[in-house]
Amino acid sequence: MAARQRLYRVTFLNQGQVYEIYAREVSHNAMLGFVEVGKLVFGEKTTLVVDTSEEKLKDEFADVERFYVPVHAVVRIDEVSKRGPARIHSGDGSKVAHLPVYNFGGAPKS
Image (cartoon, rainbow, N blue to C red; front, side):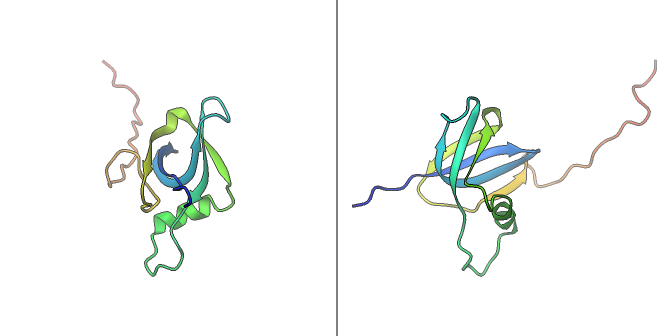
């Protein structure tokens, strides 16, 4: 009987967004201060409904065999029994995008 393959959900921050991906390999021994993620797992292309977030991740990691995430950017790593959708979402926990606030006058003078 074949051994069960481990599956990990890796959540990390990248340029102000939260990435949630699934991988078969996660380790910390290759480079000090980085988490190594390899053998990415994405959904099948045979499904009729297309998740644009997962498609964006597939394109971004198309030719990547393994990548390294700085330890301070890792939110969490979970070993899971089945794969969910890979996704990218806002880093602030809400679904509303905030507009930048500019203070053209500088600090108020007293």
